[in-house]
Amino acid sequence: MERWGVRECVCAVELFIQTGSITEIQRGFCCEQNQQEAPYPNAIRQWVKQWREEGSVKCKKPPAWPSSVRTPDSIARVLAFVSRSPRRCARKHPQALRMSDRSVQRILLTDLSFHPHKLQVVHALSNRDREMISIAALGRLFPQRVISCFGDVPWRPRSPDLTAPDFFLWGYLKSKVYSTRPTDLHALKENIWEEIAKLSEETLQAVMHRFLTRVHLCIEEGGGHLKDIVHKK
Image (cartoon, rainbow, N blue to C red; front, side, top):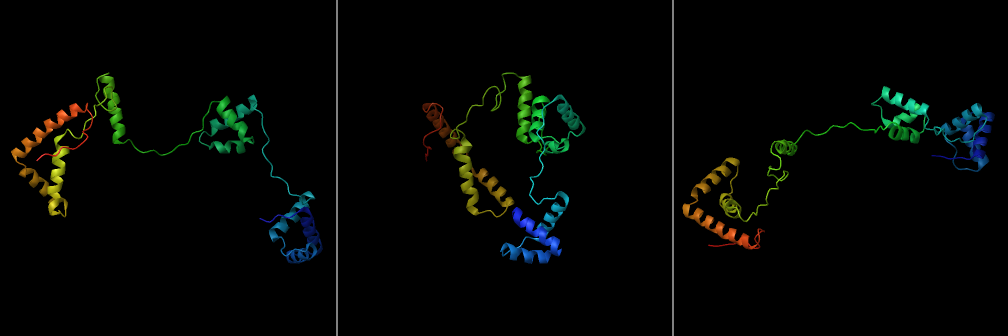
């Protein structure tokens, strides 16, 4: 944005009085002021308009809202305005009331105890939210007796080394099922059913025997996780 001093503005206005042509003003301005660039036509028109209306070409600061005092009258005005337009944006109140933003904010928060809020779209309740609501309902029906991660009685941690499917079944089935590289969901399901059917009674008995061994190891560790995975043939 171009910025010219009072001297340049006066020169442009005098040239306008003499010539009345924007082009001639720009040419004469460059010669008299020894400038390579001349003011834009809109700037020249604005200077001339200001000189005609106010008799001056000095730049004036834009008017600001006067600082208002928190008086009973101003508080009543703010209350009446907010009551008429409760959904109006709080940032637009000072302009409509012709009061300073600071005064309006203080009146709303301190004198009227109003807190601006913003309406927004929120997501629907998720399954987790519904679970929390269910836990709260169970807590009212069975106080101090709900066993859950979010209940009165904390759910005890479970070591993944103590469950037979964790340390045997899932890993075993995965290695067998994907050995033939199934290409679709139907083939994958068929492989799972086939490999589960192949599990012998002796294999399941050996798994449960190792389960007892892991229980004893967990007792030795004081209920914590096992340090090493036990592999036995």
